[in-house]
Length: 306
Ligand code: GLV
Image: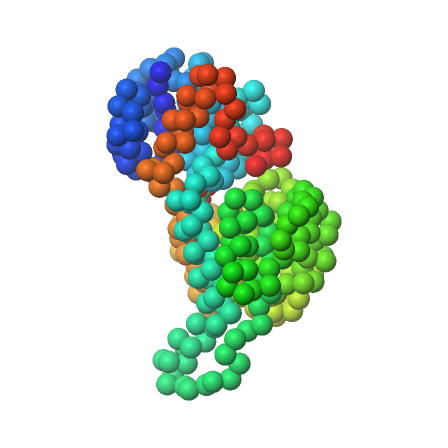
């Protein structure tokens, strides 16, 4: 049995070491140095070259290296019969929530205003808290934790997702209830999975339905956001600013206007980075489960895309 790690351009030596630590009997091959394609039964992927999986005739399971699976499902040659799992783990959830809480509090307590005032030696005690009603789009493992922690901090929090949900302990909207959801909030956190339904969801039409001055945090995927539309919406004052960790093209190109916008904060896709120590045990467990025909942990629905 062999596992292949396919993550071009990324140093995966810590993944190999960690696999060896947990189970030295597992043979690990790292793309592009593949020794024996026939022996590969499990592929761990991050931005793999499309179509490559058909070179592994005995593949039984595909695991994403992270929480998202859009990078896998965008490969049209992946057979529907192959199960796909993602990482769900406190090592991803807690850093993500901390990042979102940090971005929310920075906006709510206007850290940037005080940093700028400090440079000018301005002592301005007016309006110390912005009224902030939070809308979380995507209420799965990551979004659900953000909602609970922001509620704990005393924020009014509203959720939005694709499917109906009952018994949530927060107001929840789904599907075409988007306008009602937007009506209730003035800070939006995008934590949606990237699917054909959610791609480009943060566009000018969406922004114009938001309450004036709404603030945007995007920690999901760059392709949720139409970047030029955000600049237009900020220019017209519909949107007051944005805190962005993900971009359509990463690294964000040097000439991109987001770098120089004083209304936009840019971080380099670091909100939550998979920790091999906590992720690998669930990959190994899933490998054992597939061998023993048992239900998999964190298997995604390939039709829904998450
Ligand atoms: C990161 O973006 C992930 O999907 O884990």
